[in-house]
Length: 316
Image 1 (cartoon, one colour):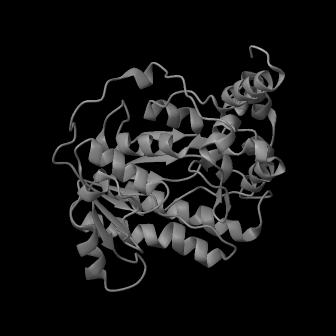
Image 2 (tube, rainbow, N blue to C red):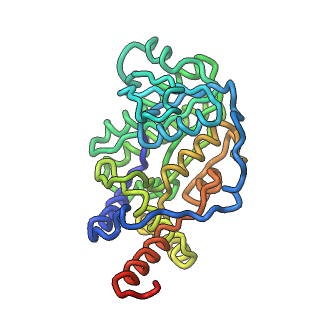
Image 3 (cartoon, rainbow, N blue to C red):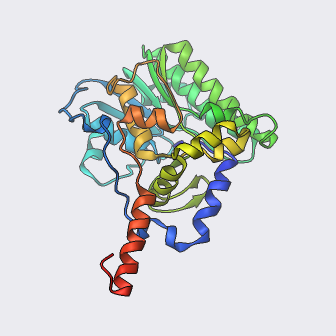
């Protein structure tokens, strides 16, 4: 699976552990729908479309598979584990295949990838070894692209990394991180050579119910609060003038559900997402996904006020 990882993630991760009051269970995430989110869902708009998702068992990939199934696509997931990540009904419609993208016979990889109309990659890796980062973010994906292209696939969707994060490669990050960005560039180039490519380029992806360090991850509730805070116009204006990782740290993170929605729309050709779209940053991704506005901070404050009201016997 793929979650863009940068050193700024550690800045973002320090905050969750400073107070238990900020964990997701202390405030529900209510989101107010935007006009984009009001578009009604239609049954099986992609019936017959064959989509192979590399890394479909993972954090982002599993959610992409779910959205594709719900849209009526025929979905194959190819991952190292091959595991079914959910017991929900949609998962029964996915063909979960086990295949290491960098090991084994090429014929086995080609058989696993199949002959999709669209290849989606949610594959990526984080770590401290430059060659490992090139392997996990570049070589593995390129192998999958070549297998799909050989079968005639000409449409691709890739979860890459924001241009503002990539701009921090020189002078802001340790040398080994160059392997991460090199791998991303390798994948983008391979897809562009094979056909049209839709790039989904987040900074930091949040979601789920637990915090993590490797890969860096925060809960849906906490992340929604930070997204709402950093989406404030004044903070956005300040970030525009900041350099490097300071700028990145002030950019709002994006929900894993929004990333999955944007990826799915890129694969389906729906939601106004063009086959060659570049969705760079949270605002672009949310718009492409039709995602509602994050209200985690508002909900947290309302929850605290309600609790104080209960304790003091007031109406709040």
